Image (tube, rainbow, N blue to C red; front, side):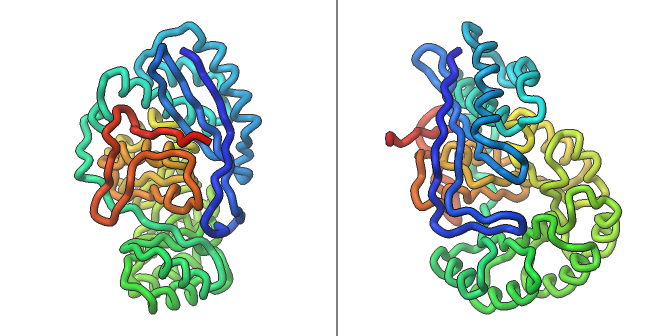
Length: 338
């Protein structure tokens, strides 16, 4: 197998702000793994908050590339285990490779990925569309620009309740709110009481990543379900989140790819927890991969390509009532020539 790496820029429609960062463009790394004439694509975006750069991801992938050179395609589970040694501390890079391997493996079987996994594409939950932190009038303007029945609202300001109350005046859409670790337990519990009446479906990661004591209180007293994000990055975190959160939001890049994410989903379901997969502003390469496993989920956040001013790929198309898959095997994504 032969591995190629490229780094691309994804320009955003609007400045995207969450509790700990803002950006106008997203850097992303694309992996292409080929065997003969057939190839698979994978993606991972960079992220300064987690220390993931194009340089350190590419370094891991180059080592994996040398290991894979001359070897034949095997099941993605086996290749994930075989190459894990090259990705210690860098799950983002491992995700890009793992996604590409799943794409290639499904293509070699002559199937779309959801067919390979025996999933029903008619059972994909509606994705939310994310509204980043901005002046309230700008957030309202973003909603009006992109009318959608389900919004995720990024919070973490000193006037979060005012934001939700004002946005509610302009739409009947369901809200999900994501504080990205910005609140205290007292705030989360208090906000949940008011947000319950404002058609908010759940709260995502209200407290700091390892504030487990605080989460015990929130889990006990919150009027809304609480979903873990930053607190549930790896397989080992699923058990830790049980009894503190009602569900988990898995990011493929944080987990290390589709392979561990599938195990995490199975574990969460066995514990009676709700399941969600989220995105990290990927192009249609990464978003298409998420869509193929979305029938397993209770909730999904795969709006990354919808936030872009210009996509670098084509793949799934997302509508309020369905997801349209291209008539191509694998994850179905193709890079658009520069």
